[in-house]
Image (tube, rainbow, N blue to C red; front, side):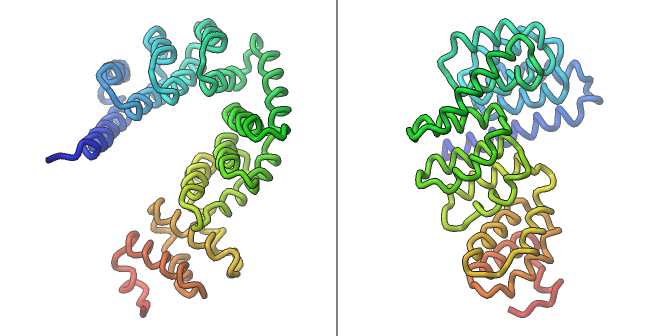
Length: 304
């Protein structure tokens, strides 16, 4: 009997491959035909991850001829992430036409995250019409972040992250050490959204093996912030890291991240980690080496 969750995952992965294939072969297929195919796929897709991937593909292919369809995705899709992606598409290619639906969402929408994302789109495209509103909102959120009320602080941190407000970076880095677990998580997520390089080392230090949840959030934020540079940055961190007990769980977490990224350029630094004083670092290095290159023992003639 087929497990339903496994089937859905299989479907998502295969549709994601199809979408990627359409984008990569758009010139051969014909760009117009590729875009039409993506819109048709959206209409029959029940999974939000697939619909989001479709809209991201439409952004990449510069879809400038389907305003009504894209507004419908922005206004009507049931998933916040899909609607946020549609807002980005509208901001890029339909700015003048999109002002009216943007205003409608800001005035009527009950989903605060989508409102903040809409403001972010308006902020990034330099909307003169919304400039005063954006400035006022950011000022209120910055004040909210300074409140003692932890709920207001968390909501403000999340909103400022979505808005990519750089003036909040240092306070967010400090918030990563808060006594409140959820505020720490939101601060890490927000730093990933904002993308300021000041946050790189604090985020790497959050790749601590002590907490899998924090590790996952920090890893995702680092991927957003560093993009294709993440492997090189993590390798450099491991090479220059002190070998103290206090940083050993971080070293293990960085090694786990290199394993998840799957780039063989990390092999040398992983081999060196086999000499680490702490067994959990050595164990993690060995585990990742086995995943990256099952023949690593032969290649490096390492005796275990």
